[in-house]
Length: 70
Picture 1 (cartoon, rainbow, N blue to C red):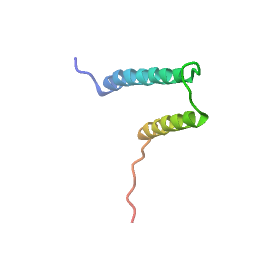
Picture 2: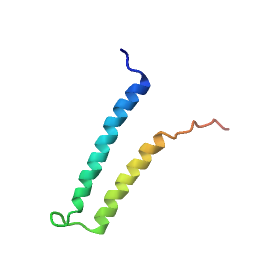
Picture 3: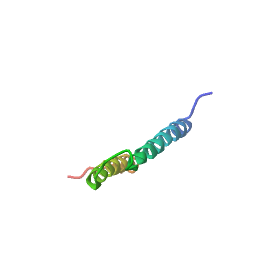
Picture 4: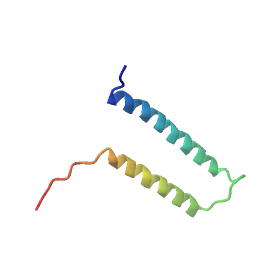
């Protein structure tokens, strides 16, 4: 049976979203001060980078076609 574009999207999206969620959970493990030493600045930089990439990925789903104007 041939997989439709919708079926392929759902299959791949599920896998990728679960990977992202798992990696964020693992990232959260760095908060354990018993094992790691970090500053608030380190945390801010880390989450700014994550937020930036999340916004960039989300924007790709909401791109509106540009209209030509002179």
